[in-house]
Length: 135
Image 1 (cartoon, rainbow, N blue to C red):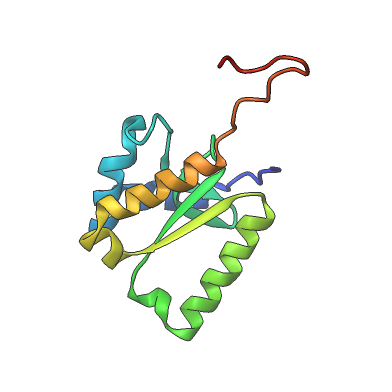
Image 2 (cartoon, rainbow, N blue to C red):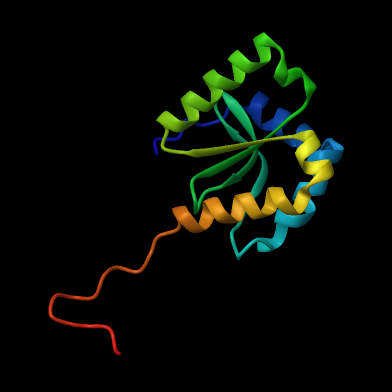
């Protein structure tokens, strides 16, 4: 993925967002940080111009976005669609969860991220031709 460099203003904005997490972002971050989810490293408020991603795992090329109420009107849905399309064109997977999902079913949110990551993780290559698995 070619990665545009964030400008100083965007870096400052991301830093400010990391300092002022929403309650839902804080709840999810407590469970993603320090490689707690299957050893995957997540970053919070990661700048990827022109956006700042809520959570990002470079190893999986996965973006996790949390959507508050402003995301569910017509304008918000369109902005999210454009953002998701842009990220997917960059080769990233995008999972979106509502703030309500995080508040009411954090374990379910984590299970979905884990399901996605297991499906996306590289699998061991097949055995060389002529070799068979034991048994």
